[in-house]
Amino acid sequence: MRANPTLEIGTGLFVLLGFAALLFLTTQLPASGVKLGAAKAGYHVTADFDDIGDLKVGSEITMSGVRIGEVSSIRYDSKAYKAVVRLRIDPQFTHIPDDSYASIQTQGLLGGKYIGISPGGSDQFLKDGGTIDQTQSAIVLENIINKFFANYSSKGSGDGGGSGGSNTMSKDMSPQSNDNHNNEKSNNPPSH
Amino acid sequence: MSANARSDGLLLGGVRRLGSAALFFVQLLIACVPALARPRLLSRQIYNAGARSLIIVMLSGLFVGMVLGLQGYDLLQRFGSEQSLGIAAALGLLRELAPVITALLFAGRAGTALTSEIGLMRATDQLTAMEIMAVDPLRYVAAPRFLGGVIAMPLLTAIFSVIGLFGAQLVGVQLMGIDHGVFWSQTQGAVALHDVNEGIVKSLVFGTACSLIAVHEGYHAAPTAEGVGLATTRTVVASSVLTLLLDYVLTAEFL
Image 1 (cartoon, each protein chain N blue to C red):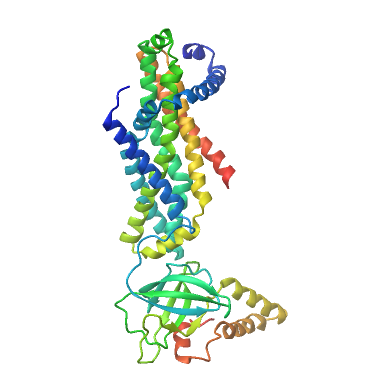
Image 2 (spheres, helix red, strand yellow; image 1 turned 90 degrees about the vertical axis):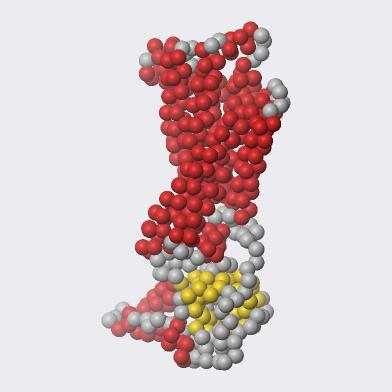
């Protein structure tokens, strides 16, 4: 059979495209893959959390519900026993007080986690390489339910058991409440 | 042969067709070994089966992905978890939609072309002429076409998945306003390599099944205009049904 350039180029392009697609599916899509896209502009700050739940690289960072950046990396500090989350803030959001408060929140009831930042009162602003000191860990639904049932069963069966349990629970849920009363109010939805 | 099969009645004829396809499969596999030594013949068939189906596969993939984006968004936002749209689209495409729809498109686009081409060769005595010249038509005509289909199918499926994913991203991120980073990070967090493998294995099996049916029907078509038409119809019907049936079996296997 004679060589046919059009045919060979067509076949070659098709095979190339097919393998490029396969490569994309096997390397980019699973979490083990390389991160998509180039590094974006902005500045980085870090925040330590006791528990980040299922926060992931790429999760949103919001202030008053407006997206201001994303989580750029997560690692575990084995000395402090904490998760160190690196946040990339978009370059136009330069006025974030350095005593701001970062909490991990849940989108909807079952949605993904994101970091909400509530501004503090300082007139110094966060800069590249800065840290957010006041943080609140993710609220893990299972833990709350476990706590609720633990309280409920320790109180024994009775009418007051349920309400008593939820009172203790709301105290347990806000461990940082002593640090900053203003922010505590705006961050924790009233739990009934 | 198929004239004989018809006179056997429905049940016996069916069993006989199945048996002849199975025997043909074995013969074909043996003929595939020397066919691999003729890469130019093979590349022509990869071009026919794969490159020529590219446009239809890409277009279908885009729209399937976009529909998945719309439907998935509408469903997920009721539970406030529209951010998981990427997961739903990626898993749906990789595991089910891409292999199955690509196989159905392949049966309609490439399978029919194979059957009618080989059937016409049979009807115009080209296959017989080859046999007289001591050229094995199984080795020279059937095996490259079969192999071309088997090779083209996983590639087409992968392309379908990628285009479909970008279709879903187009709707979810650009139209509905899901955050781009969240869409991809959630997807990457939930998709494992074995999901991708499931799609590849399925597409290989479907490619084998559809190509085998197409080549077998063409090779054994009644050597008349009517026979070729009938064989082409049977290719589409048998390929589609077998694809969906095998899909259930393979899904049960993988889950």
